[in-house]
Image 1 (tube, helix red, strand yellow):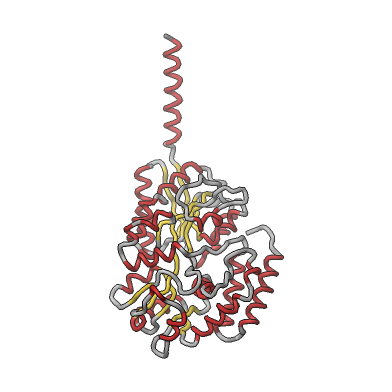
Image 2 (image 1 turned 120 degrees about the vertical axis):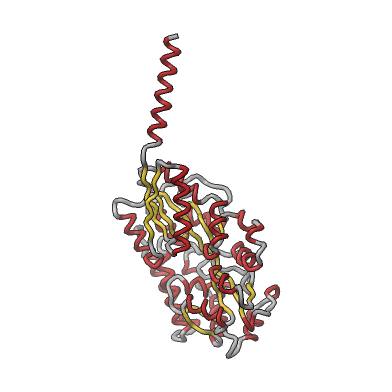
Amino acid sequence: MFRIFFNILFFSSLLFGCGHHSQSPIRLQFLHFWTEPKQQALIDSLVAAFERQYPHITIEQIPVQWNEGRTKLVLAHTSGNPPDITHLGIEWAQEFISNDVFASMPINKGIPEQFINQIKGENGKIYCKPWTMNTRALVFSHDLSTLDTNDLNWDIIISRLNTSSIIGINSSEPHNVSKKLLPIIWSTGSNLFQTLPFSSTCDSQLIDGLRLIRKLSKYARIEQSRKLDEYIVNGTIHAVITGQWILPQLANIPHIIASSLPGKSGASILSGDCLGISASSRYPEEATLFVSYITNYERVKNMCMQLQDIGLPANMQSWNDQDFLVNQDIAQFTKQTKISKILPSPPYFLDAERILEEQLMLFVYGKVNESELLQSLKMQLLALEKGQKKGP
């Protein structure tokens, strides 16, 4: 009898001891880039709901502007006191994974195939949790809104372009030049920047893509992204490759959106947001709990339905979700997302992207021809790849 009583008392003390420990106050730092007012309001609501459900956990937000990007992330993770949870663009993930910044995570079902190689380490483990995904689609407005997007090619589009019906092409702007011009280049059969090493994709097929850009440039307004979005709405231009954030502004004007880029592959660039947990976090279980909470499909879907500029949940379920297909415009972006490609993101991706964008802008402004761009781009990428060393 004494032994039974002792055992009950012993296991009870363990139970209550564990419960008391699990309820000890915990503070997690969460660095994120969703700082625009409506985005921040959504993050605040998610954090508040999580803290109500887990009152012993406090989430300390560290809002960062996208234009501070990689520099802020590197500083945060080399400071000796990195945030427990980090929000980052999928293109940056490999740089941090290769430097052992993040802890591994359980493999989740439903991750789009395009994301896998971006969030996986050399050991095959997953180190980032996909959160959202988005793409760029070809949008027509005003005079070009009558185009039949079911049987569309660049020759038809060019035949409709003139001094009044103009296409928008991005001017020099980090990270956007590649997103707007690479899909056009791919449409002629080039695989520029689709595989590693990047230098190997600088082949003769790139010439055809550059020639298409040259043809389009004759009828182009060259501006930065925000200006081009304004112009597609007010009728200054009538065609542009842009993101899903444009949809609210298109509501009251004639427009149509292509579900795939014209040409051979139909692919555009797939971008995304993901979350990583610091390898040095004192509270990895609680950090995992928070990441699982805010990446829950229904919660992310609710965010995407409230703010169209977020895109879609980074889950294959999105592509068959009727809530993303009932609206024609959202459905077209959803279909484009399914066939779009994420650029490989080795640790040196941002340097390679900078070289690419600089060369493309020299070409757009007529300072180099197709052959000169091909030769210069290949040479610079080869030098970059040859000189790679591990390090942020």
